[in-house]
Length: 338
Image (cartoon, one colour):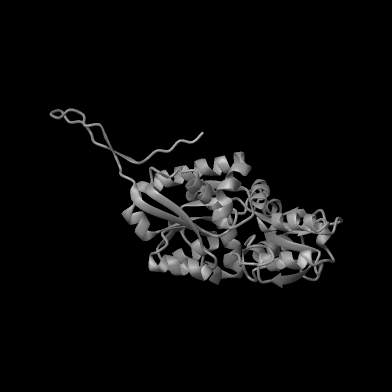
């Protein structure tokens, strides 16, 4: 999702109750009740994610020590490229990984043993601009916008919203950038005026612009625009936790405790962005103020995959109709969802 940038210091791309799974041993007529045996924690667990919004939840959960009933030793590590993430999954070195939902769909459809366990952001995509006259999608008519990741989720979402508004590239000229960081650099240099970027790149751009005496702002909330396309509200389920087959088979009793902790962590992150940023800054190699300022706009969550299915399917259906290779050649069936 992201690339390192010397200029931006790799700026891109939620009351806590922890329960372990217990095995209840039923009493018999002849034997007194034995009570409950608590499943022992794993000796070690590593969670992986990109240096982007959803990983703040993982970093917070690890840093705040919330996963003690899941594993004795828990760590969080960043994956930098999709190739690194795919290699880690296929080798078995990565078993619990935050990734784009499109990547989870792709790996699952291709039979690589991955299921989507939850969705960890309801969308973090914004059009940011130095042009004060751009305040809505219609204001893009006759203008240019720079979009990162050719043929990937940001572009496909933008094109779907464009069509929903009755516009084409004859109305809005789309220029491509290799990454959000590249788009932000062009914006800060004054070479473009509007770019479509995710958080925390959007926040990073505004912070750095302010330091340089310039003003860049969020001009369009793409979650709201996407909600008009799907009718499901302002939700773009961009990324979530995927689990490997080996983890699900070997540690089935740890799935529920893990997902519950992530729900609690997501709530804590949203309630106290400053504390979350303190825990996540070093792990994500992102400046603490950028993380703190980006959280309110990152729509961080930890929604069970099956509960999020309507929103995920709506996104995947658009991708299946335009770039089916992104999701393994076809729409995934219900077995994608844990």
